[in-house]
Structures are given as C-alpha cells and as structure tokens.
Length: 183
Image (tube, rainbow, N blue to C red; front, side, top):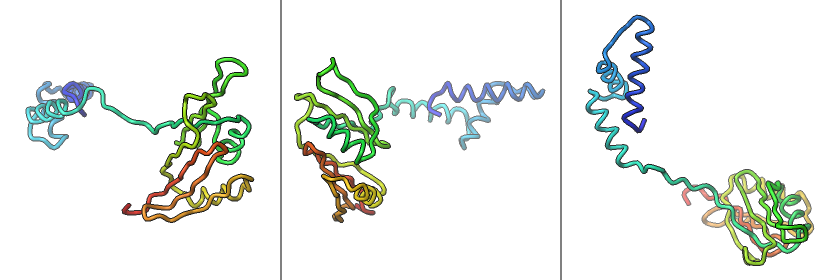
C-alpha cells in the first residue's frame, strides 16, 4: 500500500462489510483498525508513514527490460539456418520497406531477443554479447547434438562462471554465461 487513498479505501470497504452484517462503526474506528492491521498503534502513525513513503517513491518508476541487441546479417537463408535451426529461436516479426529491400527481424528464445538487420547502418559485423543463462551445460549439449556444420560450441570454465560461445555466419558472437556462485 503506497497511498493515503488506498488505506482509506480499505477502511471504507471494511466499514461497508461490517454494516452489511449489522455492525455499524464510525469511519475513524475503521481507520484505527486498518492501522493496527499494519502493526501500527494509530491511524496518525500510518498516515504519516504512507505520506513519507509516497514522497520517497518516484511518480513513475523506471523499469528496464532485457535489451534487444542488433546484429548485422548479410544472408537471410544463413541467418535463418543459424538462429531458427541451430539456436531454436523463433521469428517474432520481420519487416521490409518494400520487396527486394533489406530484411529487419526479431528472433527470440525465452527471454532472449535479438534484432537481425541487413541494413548497412544498423550495426557493424562482428558484434559480441553476453547472455546470462541458467543451464548452460544443457544448452551446449543440445547445440552439439544438432551437428550444425559450422559451429560445435564447447564449454569453458572461467573464474566468473561456465561459458558456451557461438559465432553466427556473420562473425557475431553470443556468449552464454552461467555465473558461478559467489561471482
């Protein structure tokens, strides 16, 4: 509960529910009961606490979501073979300004989202990114089992965790990293 209005609404709802059962109480009594439900001695203390919390809280909190890096691609068929076939990503959407123009698309797998672009100005070839991952060993075993002709990723233990690196047909590197305990 973050606002004065919420606590008052709770008191009103309780008062209405009690009245429906034949128990009438004053609004001030309902406010005192709500304060005690929150472990405070009085409504005055609760309203002061709510007011102080509201002053500290931003009006519109910022919430970051996972980024969607842009990787440069040069060949749609090779990109689909790698991202859909090898990494098991799905194509979420694709866009072209007109037929026979460069492709821009989003692929994803779970929380991983990537933008792939044939547009020259969107990204440089040879990008590099880290994807924090749980289950890196299982991911690596699944990728190796596919017998993908151009990539057989290994596992590398680093002091910061277990890593499996893949490189797409355009030189872009994705490092799947499972962070070690305490790292």
